[in-house]
Length: 222
Ligand code: DX5
Ligand code: ZN
Image 1 (tube, rainbow, N blue to C red):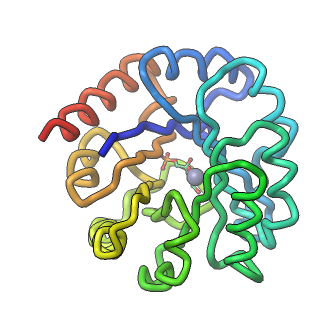
Image 2: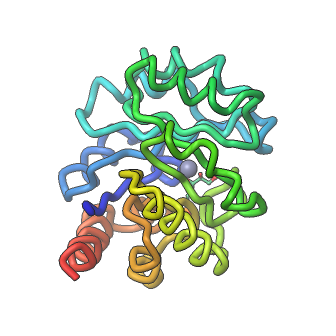
């Protein structure tokens, strides 16, 4: 399975966002992770449709939009029009999870479903047939720079097991506290799409991206 890096712009220097995106994309990152927060599902606000629309003009990289908002079905169409390629919603935030996932598909985007650390992995089972990706949060959503929660590793492995048992082709994405030191363990547990904010955008973006990509490629070959 192909391993993918999705740098999260939450940790980028927003005043230089276009340049920072180009640096990580030219060093090999395949996705760009965009965290959308509504101040309700999570305490803070972050980016909205305008930002997605604006950065769409400066790069062809795949936009992996993570909606941390209540009742996301209302915004799916709009984010698709603004340039999202994949839209991930939270199981905990949807009034009707299946309808929301179907709506994402209808809009022509890839479909992602995320669960918070306290949600049982088995809760995703009824929705596996509707998704392209499951996003396992390895921190409480809402803030960058937090520490990876160790029990996420078992949750990743269980997710991969549930997917494989059903013979499905679904990506497992991990978001929160991923760094060079824990990356290989996370990949070995069964994740193949890696979100990282601080460990990519803080410091030398090109060097950080190249180091992440090296580990992703090594794990792919193993
Ligand atoms: C947290 C966000 C993450 C965040 C990850 O709610 O969903 O995407 O940017 O940042 P790091 O890698 O710094 O934990
Ligand atoms: Zn995220």
